[in-house]
Amino acid sequence: MTGLSLHDVYKSYGETRAVDGVSFQVEEGQIVALLGPSGCGKSTILALIAGLENPDKGEICWDSASLQGTPPNQRGFGLMFQDYALFPHMNVYENVAFGLRMASLPAEQVRQRTREVLDLVGLAGFEERDVNTLSGGEQQRVALARSAAPHPRLLMLDEPLGALDRTLRDRLLMELGEILRRMQQTAIYVTHDQEEAFALADRVVVLNLGKIEQAGAPQAIYARPASAFVARFLGLSNLLNGEVLYQQGLPVLQTAIGDLPAAAIPAGTPAGKVTVLIHPDGVQLDSRLPCQLAGRLVKKSFRGSTCRAVVDVHGTGLTFDFLSSAPLPAVGEPLELGYDPTVALQVFPNP
Image (cartoon, rainbow, N blue to C red; front, side, top):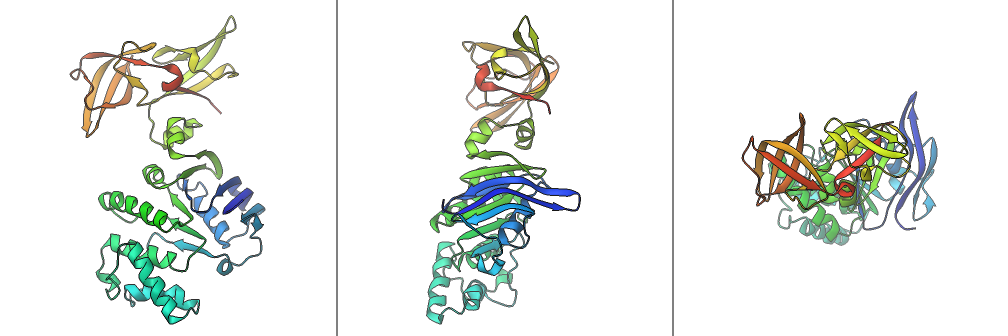
């Protein structure tokens, strides 16, 4: 096993369990995002990996060798903060070269590596620039170059785009992923923003109250969230209260918009209260599909290649995404939506 691995890691502060049995792996060259709301344990996990905190139980390893007892400065890990923490009295070159000089590398090696990483982040020729005169995006790239210059075997990025406005964040997000992959840099990216995690990471670990709710490829998590919490956190709003009943041994799925197909109920689901997700891109304007939802178009908004529609179905507003070319009726008009229940519906037993 190469790279970083956490095995059943726990960490508590008094009565609060911040990390509760967490296990995951970051393979060399991979970017893994830790995604979750404030207080879910993301920052504590970073502190444990960095060696700034010690786990109460469990093991953190690199290449299958335990890091227990290894001081932070000997782990070979780098950390990039949200505020970048650039040295204001140093120019771009001096900021990037700082860590290399602290490692007592030869001057020529410092010059070569500093220029190499500045070129990788698109800042060749910026060596003499005052960091205080740089844009937010340029400062972010200087901070990335400084963090990556010493060849860390793992780079941890803690909400690195959180201080930027949305337009700049969206642009830099794509650049950041390209730079990390160009460097073949193993990285953990911490964020509360699912769009950032999905756009950047090879794998995403979704956290809630110190536990892993789901881990996997971004596409797989979005397509089949493992719980109602994950669905809500990803912004999937078509969540209905429901109940599974068994009548003469056959399952029935009751919801506020009527009975939905029992084919959506996972095998072995007990009778009781459930939450039902209708995927926003799981329905079509197609009467040939096996199941239908009848409703009235309440609102539609053009979003480039897609159009978002709000449909009233028996008094419940549901949101769906269609291709902009889809023949939607006028607002206020009725429409019928076809769907395959095994694709469009998910049923989550309530805890």
